Image (tube, helix red, strand yellow):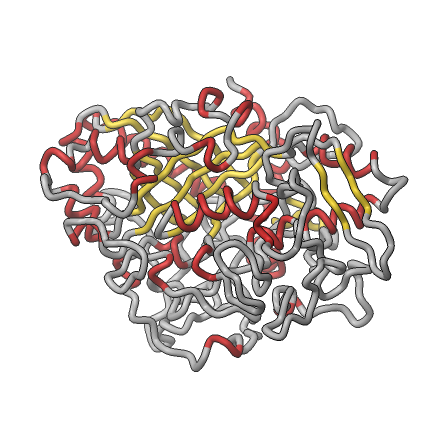
Length: 543
């Protein structure tokens, strides 16, 4: 048993009995699970939905072909567990045939790839959902598929379709290993250290299975494994599980949206114009749908050819990221003579660990009167007239959250105060892996981190731009001069001999400088994936 499997086994042992109580048997939700999941948001938001952001304009029915688009591109499933399978193609014809069975509509034959439609049952209704439709039960699993460029080659798509063209997507063709240094994946995070065959050319197809219960996960995993092996179609070369971290609430063990560093996750949502979900207000212009779904009207790329292959698809960067929670917590404590550890954690991230943003509450994580959950993302850093927090006195300009989504801050790629910075946005879908961190037993030797996808239509303009220009560059903030060695303090690639994070102080007081820290994350695997539409999967299957 490898370390990944040991970590997962420990996590399951830790929470297994409680999970069985919550999730029930046979893949169906128990009343206990539904109650706690609704409380924590894993079955979607309740019906007290905030009004759309003022920038969003009047609600409009989506023109996106939701039934042709893979579901996790536009929808958050909010299921508490996930399993990722990495496959290599063994018999191309059998592999293509199997992919077709995943979109045949015959659930009795094979689990079906989940699309972006029909999610009004069990979730908050979206703008494009028809409330007159006959209600159906929430599915007990969701299934999605990514194919790398070596995977398309191994499936013989290029051989059988001479006109194939991904001319706007050179990063996808080059692959994650070739482009690793551009995004800071070097040294211990470099491809030579990646697990499971990632970056070696045999990482062809990623199948991702979300499930509502341990029983459902086992049942559908067994079905998929049997399908992969039929006719020698695929060989499974790696798998990894993720699971929502659990915590006690009112005497019950409930799934949370927390990550291993202790922060509440999933607060900041990327608003898609005409998308199927409702989004809480966030002061930003909605992103155009072609930033995440390959569309003809896109401004910065040509849809891959042939159109049956390219339209309604997307791209995603899959990553396994190990988090150094012990190193992070020790770093916070080592600077307590300069700044309170929890305030330092908030300044580094841009939010307090409970999710309250510094932009709305810079002094405390419990402001008088509180902040309604739907308002936790409704703020701006710099307004159109230059007011707000341009120098980072409330939230440092170099904080993690402000780097990955600068909002109205004039930065590289967006030079106007109050600008929307939407053309570089990402959609992230992920869950933690490994057991929850126990501060009473910090050196347990178990690996913990995050698994998931960064979804975008242009890996170069979105994922790579954000990582190279905003996360790992000190000059990203334009007129605000950061230390030349400054990078994102939480996910930047750090050298302890040079690392620095500067926290500005009000009233001319000297800034607080913390130095000498290592990277708190390590990339353990990465893959640049094409997320084909349902039409595209059928097209491939018939070649």
